[in-house]
Image (cartoon, rainbow, N blue to C red; front, top):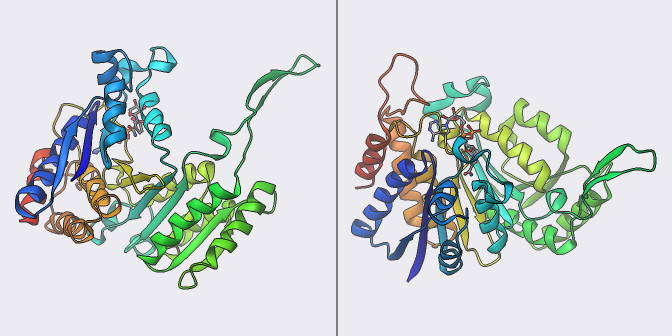
Amino acid sequence: MKKILILPGDGIGPEIVAEARKVLDCLRENHGLQVEVEEGLLGGCAVDAEGAPLPESTLALARQADAILLGAVGGPKWDTIERALRPERGLLGIRAALELYANLRPAVLFPALAGASTLRPEVVAGLDIMIVRELTGGIYFGEPRGIRTLDSGERQGFNTEVYSESEIERIGRTAFEAARKRDGRVCSVDKANVLEVSELWREVMERVARDYPDVALSHMYVDNAAMQLVRDPRQFDVVVTGNLFGDILSDTAAMLTGSIGMLPSASLNAEGRGMYEPIHGSAPDIAGQGVANPLATIMSLGMMLRYSLNEVALAEQVQKAVESVVEQGLRTADIAAPDTRAVSTAEMGDAVVAALN
Ligand code: NAD
């Protein structure tokens, strides 16, 4: 039986994860889903309880799990502690330990929420993009790196953008596979007019494309991609790019949809095991008030069903249930129009469960 590890984390993490848990329990009780579920500590709560953001016990559970559902980590309480103990280190530690190199971030705008975007509704209505970001390579990890003092006495900071062919190929395959289940188009984003690493990136993407004759590959320079994302975002289906460019473009794409509380993500390794989490943080400003939007976390569970548990039909049911509560007009405060009644975190979770049943 597949194993799921749940890591509620800090801030609003436990509140939103509790709602995803209701959905998970409903799938187990009424929809035939067979999984084992464990819970663990990650982030600031783990620092408080065990003295480390990623305790050995959590790491051991993570290594055994087929999939991990994470709420969010961090908060002001841990902002000033020693760097190695910061909650975010726990997150990076799991990503590294499980080699979660493929970050999948869908940016989908529900028609009923077109008004929430900062772009005009006619530009974004029906938006459905999948950003595939390489997560364990590139300039964030490249060596050499550091700050050195030059002969002149001036200090110089330096980092290295590196990608090997195998790293490019595996993220390419993730993107092409994803495109096959969508609209069959991959746009690879690079800076091949300036960077050698991008030249290789482009060459390898072309090579991978030959194995996917049913998927159309195009290339775009990152500066143009940033412009096109806000000019005409619906031209994209799957966008694949490296760690640095993906970091920036995925946040841009996220904001097109208007609400950070509506966006799930998946980080996968070569065996399809993965960590699933909302893209937002622990929202300390609203933690403990029962007002956070649980839909990003519930849709992260949906992505888990699709990508790690191979339960595509259940994944679609979860997505439809979320769409239906949004269409019914249910809104947590972050997506509610001014002067309208917002529902609580728990009311939203209950509504999704009701829609599932
Ligand atoms: P944040 O995403 O937590 O919050 C940004 C804004 O969005 C806040 O006003 C918040 O109230 C709102 N918001 C976020 N999620 C929401 C939801 N589900 N429903 C309604 N409103 C929501 O970002 P931040 O304020 O920059 O960071 C807060 C903490 O979270 C920091 O400690 C940061 O390090 C951490 N963080 C963690 C992760 C993660 O766990 N993956 C990601 C980003 C930030």
